[in-house]
Image 1 (cartoon, helix red, strand yellow):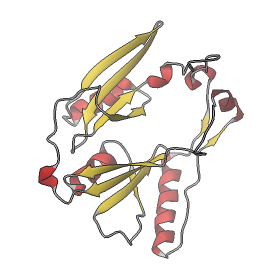
Image 2 (cartoon, rainbow, N blue to C red; image 1 turned 90 degrees about the vertical axis):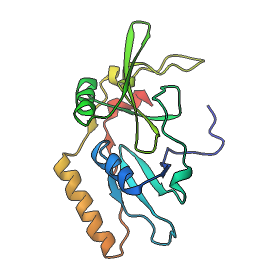
Image 3 (spheres, one colour; image 1 turned 30 degrees about the horizontal axis):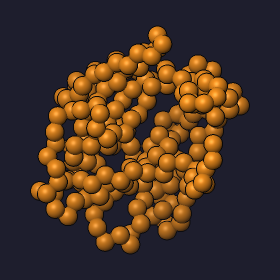
Image 4 (cartoon, rainbow, N blue to C red; image 1 turned 45 degrees about the horizontal axis):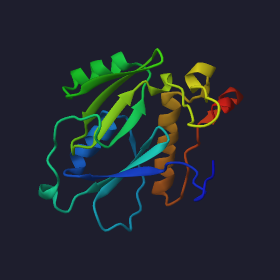
Length: 194
């Protein structure tokens, strides 16, 4: 495959918000993102968040009343999708938080993928799934095995280590220094999935 634009990865998605505060609450407390420093030169309200290797940029709408009304949950609408460790845990948490959702199940060759769809406060569709059950199969050539099937092991930090690193980064940015959070390191047995 060619890479004509020499792209490296997905950096962030931007979401226009009716209420920056409500959206911040949702992305922090429901989806588990954390705030990161945003350039002070912007002349509009917003917030930058990060987790799972991607950024979410929330932008306060200049005219919230003109934003489209939130419709019914339709899995065929544009959405962002997150993989999870336990669909049962996610479903229980959504019920506990009284977040309306729609369940779906996809079957392909005896492999099942479970999906939960719901809206953020502005109507952007969110999907939570166990999509890594399904192998990625190019339209031409050999199948690429799903990482979960070849025992991908991530060298992960504990939540406490992540929180300490975040607090250190915040302290450094307060001193007007730029810092980067370390990336997740992959063990060699992950490489066959690339």
